[in-house]
Structure formats: C-alpha cells, structure tokens
Length: 105
Image (cartoon, rainbow, N blue to C red):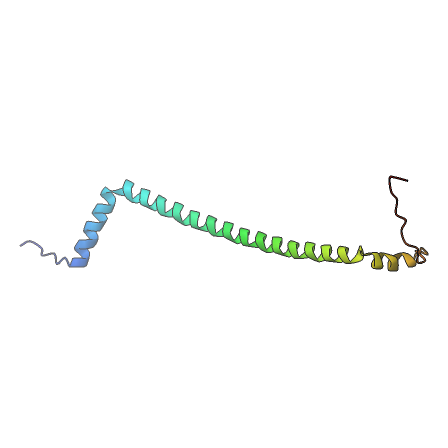
C-alpha cells in the first residue's frame, strides 16, 4: 500500500513558494539589492537633513551674534560715546566746534 501524505495548505504553499524562489533566485536577489539601496539612500538623506538643520542653526546663531556686534559698534561710534571714551585718555574737545573748510577760500 502507498503511504498517504497528508499535506496541509501551509505545507503545500511553502513548498510552492520555495520552488518559485529557487527558480527565480536571480530576480529575488535583484529585489533584495534594490531594497538595500533604498534603505541606504533613506539613511543618507536623513543624515543630510540633520546636517542641514545643524548648519542652519549655526547660521542663525552667527547672524544674531553679528547683529549684536553691529549694534554695539553703532552705539560706540556715536560722537557722545567717543567723547566719553577719549576723556579717559586725557583728550577733550573743550566745547570747540569743528571748523568748516570750503574750497573757495
């Protein structure tokens, strides 16, 4: 008498799937390669986005530092501020106004 093999649906399906994968091994390996490239590309793009955000934060911080220094320089270059700073050096204007020169004289 022949042996009865009770093959369930999962066993027959896995056998068919295994045969299909083996017969199409080149195609399956190509799909695996594409998936690997896709994942690597995703990681590379996320790394670039993080780097761009870090650089943008650095640019913003440097811009605020530049504006702060520019504001301080504008304040220190006023005539009244310059007079206050040169008094410490012993220089003074003593109330004299600047002399106006003209080319016609």
